[in-house]
Amino acid sequence: MRLYIDPGTGSMLFTILVGLIGAAVFSIRMFWVKVRFFFSGGKKVKMDGARIPLVIFSDDKRYWSIFEPICRELNHRGQEVVYMTASADDPALNTEYEYVKAEFIGEGNRAFAKLNFLQADIVLSTTPGLDVYQWRRSPEVHYYVHILHMPNDATLYRMFGLDYYDAVLLSGDFQVQQIRELEKLRELPPKELVKVGIPYMDEMKKRLISAPILAEHERTVLLAPSWGPEAIFSKIGDEILKILLSTGWHIIVRPHPQSFTSEKELMDNLMEEYPPSEQLEWNRDNDNFEVLRRSDILISDFSGVIFDFTMIYNKPVIYTAGELDTSVYDAWWLDTPVWTTTVLPKLGRELSKENLNNLKEIIESCLTDDLYSKGRDEVRKEAWAYPDEGAVRVVDYLTELQKRLLESGNDNVL
Image (cartoon, rainbow, N blue to C red; front, side):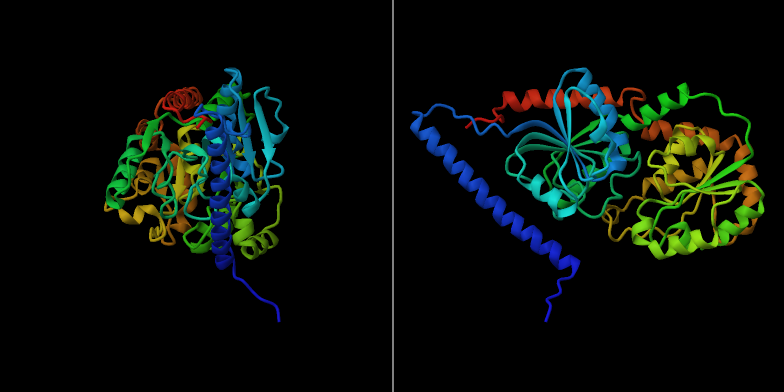
């Protein structure tokens, strides 16, 4: 008889096992340091040489766009960083920065096992759920810093996503307010909250300015749904594809990468029924820069690509609002409305089953209405602090933090 352990139980057992091993390893290591401290006559004794001053952890290759501007700025200043990735094909592994060492640390639990025993002064990551799921705080990491990977609500992570970080790097005052409210409700010690801007959006803006002018092309509509029960294909189905194709315009479909894992059957069926053609294009590029640049208008739901498209490319969107179920998110704890849902009407028109048949007219209206141009300016002011300064401000903060840790005695000595 074979023993079956469901994924949830397996995850819990892994967390317990790693926690026990981690506690044992840390206790043994500290005992050895204290022995050396005793025999040195009470002089400070260095820990072993494995401690790393700064680590950046990325759980997926698609976040290289978040971290590359930061790594470039660190390299420019001659500051060493170890970039740990859970993707074997992460573009970071092929970079040649002198002071940035990229290494693949395995996928899933293998990556978290390494992180849970990490010796480092600072860890910077955009992965939520520290000390909640498999990724535990290492006793030998002094400071965990989170950077958001979208300019939207800090409360749209699954519950407790940011609770156990020491600092969070943000891009808007509304995010600061959300985190402070959660800390108060949960009686958590206040985290260090620093507005730094959005490095990856700064980078996309630079690329757009320097890119060659697009050649004349037919009107192009980008359909970029998220995934899950509230996403476009789950709520509306393939009817939206039929209507878009009936316009005669060029249609690009770019599903969320997670759809091809969590909704594989749905994606397979759609791609079989609507195969690529001269009019229809399925896009899975790792870098979305060109596909956004080629598109005149975006149709999406609550995907973060809405903000890239409106704030950088200065183009209108059509969105499906739906009923966002916040029960699994930090937003559930707050009485205030989700910021993203309040600003979407400033950026474009809402699409529903009721007005789906008028989609062509809605698209034409969005492309000519100045109202949404003003709305984009308002949202930029709310969500994009310090344009063009993001990477510099992140590295300024990390440098200042390292100095503070050293001055406070949190270095690798006992």
